[in-house]
Image 1: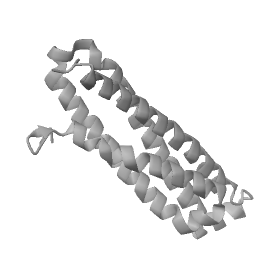
Image 2: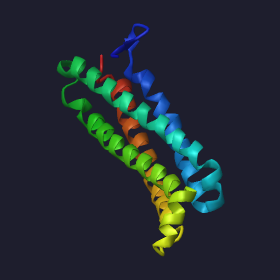
Image 3: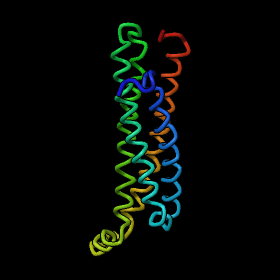
Length: 159
């Protein structure tokens, strides 16, 4: 889906993860700080990062299509933006996996199994904190990627 309403889809698609991923990072921090919230809001936070992950994939694919279409015009100017976009996708995928892992580890059936092994609820808490850190990194990388993309457009590198 390269064109939406007659416009390149990439500038439209980037707004979904730009909202969902930082919001999910804040939610991840909240449920890491208050473990009781993990059972109450963990599924919603995981759904939010799932939306952010899907949006990041859509933005990445549409960005690659736009890069391929404009490659002869932009040359090396868009390479940094593209590289950051690929790194952001990896970070958002890791964020998604840690959030889902934290919620699954905190689920009653899983937590009872883990407690029988002597690990207690530490696995869910550790994954929640890792998710919060990876979510913060994904947010920073997303902002860096967006900055590079904006710089490309506003510095007239893309005609």
